[in-house]
Length: 211
Image (cartoon, rainbow, N blue to C red; front, side):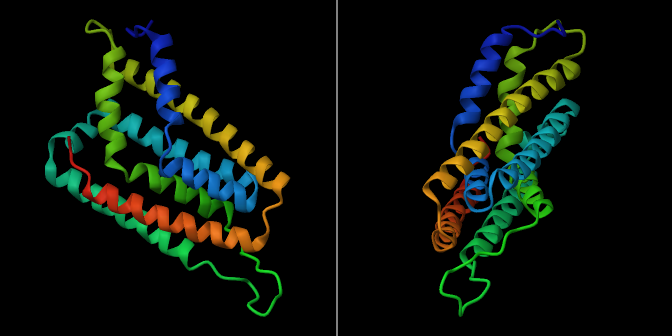
């Protein structure tokens, strides 16, 4: 149907790829551990929205520009890396809401801002666009009646699997955090450690190559 073949293999491969750790998973786990599962789901929805932008762009051929133009790839790459590092600086600068208080507390972020973080972290990563161009076409037949439609269908399936995994990750992290009762002080340091990891991921993205 739609000129798609080996769909079970595509679903399994996509699930395994989504499970691999990266900035998306790190963001979801951090927000879930510090603000609960709703914050993790907000990040998940943002990531899912960003993924759909990549899917539609690839289906329309826009992502091919990133795959073939070194200038376009470099521009998006540096913008994405700068945003990740900007987000990392915000995490590193996390402070107590009341410096005089005996217990450190970290002010929660609005869900809309968490959604935006997830969206921008994903959509500004050109490696995701190149991945879709390399991975998805392998499961589309050469004689498919509409390759663009088949691409969108497979992209939606991949995104749905990813969001199910990310939602499960958010719920599991929030539940584990509640069980071990992460203190506000630990949450403060968790933000700072995550900030350090995001700086590493931002530098890694900035140094990544097109192919």
